[in-house]
Each structure stands twice: as C-alpha cells, then as structure tokens.
Image (cartoon, rainbow, N blue to C red; front, side, top):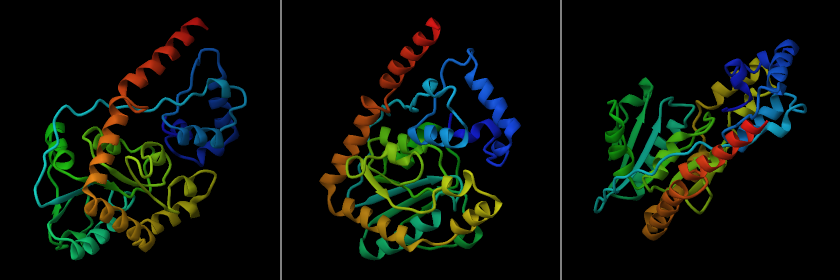
Length: 284
C-alpha cells in the first residue's frame, strides 16, 4: 500500500467519515487479514496518522518495492555531462526548478546536457538553453533506459508529489547517483551523501493533504507552481559537486547499484521478507 489514502482513492476527506473509518478498521482487524504491507516507513506512518490502527498495529510491516538491476552497461560520453529528469506531471515533480537550476549551471559549465521527459506547459515549450533536450517520444522500456539512464551521469527529480518514486529505483539500477527532495518516501531511497543527495523542501504533498481541508489542497496547487529559489540553489550546488568530482559521482553511482543488487531495495531482500510473511500467514 502506498499510504493510508489508498482505501478511499486518496480522498483524505472521505477518510474523516466515521462510517468509512469503521468499515476500514473492521476489515483490517479481521482474522482474514493476515498482514498489512506499506511500501515504505512513510506509508506506514501515513496509514497510522489517517486511521486508528490500535486493533491491528501488530499486522503492519514495511515491505519495500524492489527492482532488478539493469543488465546493460552504462554508456560513457567523453567531454559531456548529462543530467536526466523524468516526471509525468511538470509542476508536482518540480520541473520548473530543475529547468531554472540547469539555466544557472549551463552558464557555469560547458558541455552540459539536460534530458527532460515530462508534460511541458506552453510557457516552457519554447525555452532555449544550450544542451536542453525535451524528450517527447514514448519509448519501449529498453530504449527509455538507454536514453534516460544508461547515457546519463546523474538523475534529478525535485518532486513534491510522489508516494514512492520508482524512477529513482530505475536510475539506481543503472548505476546513477540520484538527487531528490526530502518528500515522503524519497529519503528512504536516497542515502544523503552516499548514493546521492537529498534536498530540503517544505512542499511535500502529505503536509497539505492529510487531516487538512480543501483550502490546504488549493494552496498546494499554488505553491508547487512557483519557482523555489531555496530548492534551485540546492540543486545547483549538488549537481556542481558531481560535475567537479568525477570520483564522487562514480562512487555514488556504484552505491546506488549496490543497493539495488544486494541491499534493502533488491529483489533478493524483498523476496526473503515476503517468503517469511507468507509462511507466517499460513500458520495462523
């Protein structure tokens, strides 16, 4: 489960209804419900904030999504540093902030390239920056990995809206350092200073939606459409570190790959936990 909101299709107002709460609680407390598996600690915390879990808290166990490591080798480009961004929704994923950060970086460094795959608002469609490539085509998964990950040097997603962020796992599986915001599950995927960098943000979605009202949700839509100088500054600083320290970039990329191959986000680790969960459930 992604969060407590899954039971009402992420309608957090509906979760406030006492009847809805009672239906959910009775179902989860039932003897037929053996385990409740949030996909992150953030999702677990969100569940426990939204619903009274007193009757079934012992059933709740975090089970991370996992991914197989990419089998293809990275493609190295001489004298070029490639940044990649993938986010279907432009503003919720921080599209304007990475574009502004790239504008600043492109004035400081030569031979930079930003591969930007997203829905692009009209006001940004004619943006001209050296090395900026808007990727509009839809590719098969293998081709997408090649263009957006295997040919890149770093993956950046200053998101405000992700429940998890599977694209981070994809980038890590290809051996990339990753840069993301301290939003919901992202800090559980990125070990700051180890396989990438975390960026401070006050705009994470759960701060606006959980146990809030319609006005907070409207404020979220307004806040994420702004440029955020404090976020832009951090993106510039972190990418600059990787541009100027190739060994650090390689080290972080290897650490990302290791987390996917043998670490807590590996298929092997996930399956080990899942097997135990099924075995325990069968005994009850």
